Image (cartoon, rainbow, N blue to C red; front, side):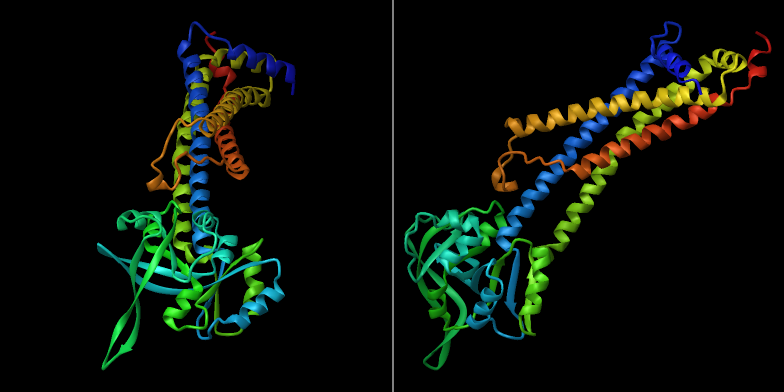
Length: 397
């Protein structure tokens, strides 16, 4: 195959043809469509990845990487020491879980966790921020979420009545346990469900209130929870449950993955529609250049060379669109990351800035998908051109 001849014809066909301007315009539209599709897809997937990672970050902290909890067997101090000895690199925060109601002007139900403030701060940076100014927690000090704190309408350091679900004997009957507690801190997770429905209390104080010596469970931080969870499962006795944060929110992340795939496919349609312009442009060019193609074939050009001309012509337009689109998409991602062009309501999304994080895998899939579409859209017109009937075309010329 004569590459010089093929490249010469391609350069010639890329020039503006005054006799057939619509073909040139169609090529431009195809280029712009592919460029826009690639850039839009990159930015959209970057936003989806950024939001997914932001939600994952929030859920990781509030749900903890790994949780060991009481199932058939109680979790106690002995098990905690055993895990600390076997896995010294992990961080542990034992907790007691209880439901409670805070009484202040109105009743607000919460899920109360009794924790060691120092140990909890090591694995929960949101909690750490809430108690950073607290020197020494009291027995009945409580940290609540920002949304609950606003609903209560109180100031830090103020005391409220907390009603516990556990009942205590009193005379000939039973009554709920009531205790005055002090609100010493406010955390803000960015997720309304947590900020309104979760509170933390000094574990020693909660032990005394509930008369409970064992733990409800142990929150664990590890360098690689996906692998470390198997080690912990082998180390705990039968009857003790072990669960990872990804297992607690499996349906949520499955929905996010499905949404991401659907968005990818929908936006890929932009590139497919643009690729149809390549097909129509090449077919129009073949119809207008039939005599030239037949003449080239009669002068010795092979069908393979003719096929290569139109295949490379369509591929060139597509690759040019992909390249410029990738550059524009990268520029758009940089602009959105650097400047606060789009601001989000923090109480709804948990972040005030638009999070963007385009992974190399997604970028590769976008470029590969666009390239395959471009190649496929160029094959049919190239085959059509290579099968031009020389005798039929030049019979009356």
